[in-house]
Length: 493
Image (cartoon, rainbow, N blue to C red; front, side, top):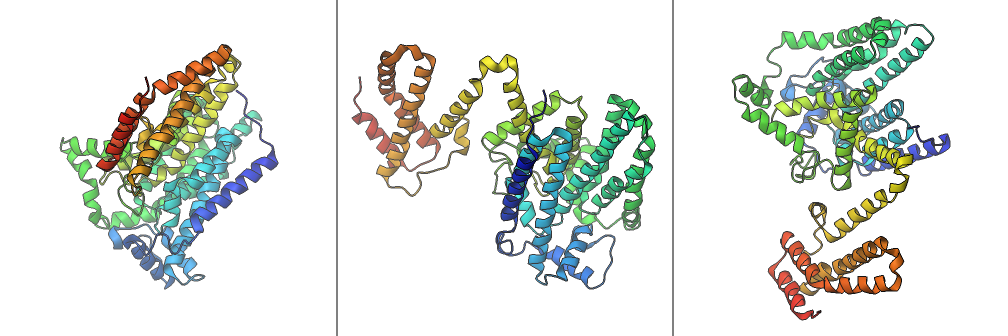
């Protein structure tokens, strides 16, 4: 399937609109929302002020151990903005925008313009990415540096493929920039220590799928890993010389220690809780700084698109771009699967970019499916599914009832009864007429009359559904009594 061509001017215009929306979401009242400073923000502000005062640390042992890259950025910003809270959140917001732009250009290289625009849009508005860009916490540097590293690496890989077409090899210096970025990533946050594993596994994958590419450019790949090791070496030396620098975090590794002793239950518990955070209602992070308590990363249609995107990536695993995203997601999710507490959005931040691209991949894949000639006769399928989903949300039918807002609280009994019955009855009637007339358009007025009669006969059934929806919403007993009164008063034979 050929890529959908989007004119360059439209692409730039849409990208500018996405960036403007992202700026609004990240910087509007950024010094007041979230209110006050979280204790982690206070610790980071204190460490940044120490750098501003002249300290040059490789690693902070204070605050359970912290890598210093974020604090260097905030320390520099404090020279321009003296208020620590504003400096913290300004740096986080800028890093969030860097992540968005780097992800856009990365997706553009890997999957094309439509996926890049959709993926960037998800990063711009997804509650998880917005909240981490508004909090003055160091983990946002991991998301930004990981995405920048991936972009530089794939630019190197793209150049290598072009050089092979001309029977030339990639310059050795081309591996330096992505290697330096990979090394700097390890100065962001502890879970970054698994990021080099992404590239080790992916180069192994390339050796399986495109052995000639690896053989022709193995020196550039070696420079890439050597540059990363050289940049990381001071941090490695410090941690080896100070083995007690991170002992305060021992409680987080309790599931791993239990696993080594033969007890699988804690790891199974944390892994299950982590996997639930993506789409399961109530499975999200309960901490209010990082999430609306219990809210999963995706709700409603977003959950479906995320799952479809994962399936598309698995089916297309033999394509390097999809394999890279799956490897990235799996490797960076690993620290969450085996450590406590779970779910913990803060620790999972390195997965943001591959997570955000999954709904975009699903959307583009569904569009490609509908463009196929064999699907021309089934072009009605997607609109029908959308209509059914819309009516499912309107009627709060399972599984869409999980995301239906509670519109009854605070309303008087009569209003609650009207909301719970009349609006749903109208939607149910329209739904029945749509299916009846759509399935038998030749029936004319007879079909219309029959459809209306059928709808009227369904009133009792619909009131039963209405009552069940009210019950599921845990409304006050007088609302349920009001619906019961309506049932007895409607007399339709």
